[in-house]
Length: 595
Image (cartoon, rainbow, N blue to C red; front, side, top):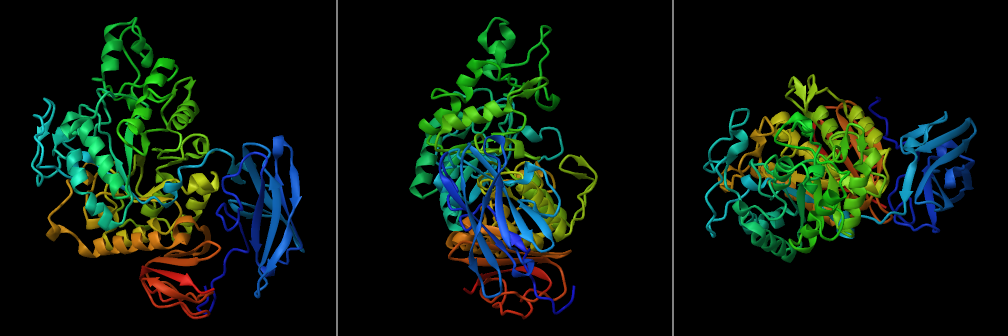
């Protein structure tokens, strides 16, 4: 790249944000205005929107509605929503031929429909989730209340002092109990308020046979070790008083082998619970990933569905009506309802969504979740594949021999690779699903990002976390510098002694969260990539009233000349058109573009 080259956006752009779509949540029969912007250098002479109502191709002509001083044009088309899904793309006529524009970008050749832009008439996610900033708490390791008398630990547990090291990678790691409880979480809600998050995600709170509690023994009550039902209700009420929403966590794929349903199923072949699991005549049974303590649910049982997630008497419904939850995160959601020839994953998602109504439904999915994110099931998933993995690949300084279960080291991505991967995943789902994916750097299921990338690069990743589309999630402790080289090691108890905090990281997280909270473009604006090379990526988030430019760099790079002027919000001096961006070496800059 030449040192005097001014950065330029892609020649054509559209996304599902309000800047380009008149109604993100239309109903069947509505007409939606769709806008596309094209550079003057393309010399576009006509634009059509191709959709496929009732499966047949339809072309609606667009009109040129605006031309900027630099020649950039805006074209607008009115397109009816005939079916529950409106898939569409733009056809651009230029002097050199026709071009298709889909969510994957421009193409001069025909492309398949799987990357068409999509708008749906399904009910949207709850409005509050548009601004959600999520904080994950692994309950046993967050806070221990001294104000209530907890029962004696269960027989399987090994009590640990708060300062004791985690027994990761050794026998007894899953039985090591530090004694965090729900009353303790409630007592620390002011920490969340000070950080600036507004949504609390709790790992499972049902009785179980491990410290992670994904092997539940009943769904009838909150674990007495955590304070029981009363503690969860007290927590959700205290959170609501502070403007914080609370999400629960549940496995719809399996229970623990100590679950009362499973015990009954094994004991009585004629019981209704026998149909809740895949149990063979000889007593063998299907289990999650072959782990015998996690027997797999058989969702062909209507009674299982009724008890678990389908209808007002289900566990999912009770979480909202009795415990005060604002929604659920579903563990290993990509597996729920799937076993051999049984394929009911869509049914599980749709029925759970129907039961929850206007409450949030998120799913764990570590892979391509596009098939499950059309709009009638999960509102979004944990974006491991479309966000966390590419960010790790770009910023990791530790290259292990295994990358989240994949044989082989963490691949060495460039910034351009990251943008390519993020675009590939986001282009396959509706914008509303994309913006309701849970973006994250790490979780209770990974090593801590800080231990893989280092303290400085953690902040580069945090800048991406809080400025890109999605619902950003902080795993409790990231904001103060907690480390962990393995997923179990990453579940260290929260260090409440302030002297142990990395205050620089704490301040940076608070600044980034505050910026996202105060600038609408960072929450609901469109995304337009400006530049991606080896060591730096630059993008724009924009609404009709505000444009934010973000640059993140992992190391020294050639000078890049700004295409705009703007004031600095974080990380550098002001932007001046035609002069180098005030970003040199490793760091990030966030600017409000002058209008």
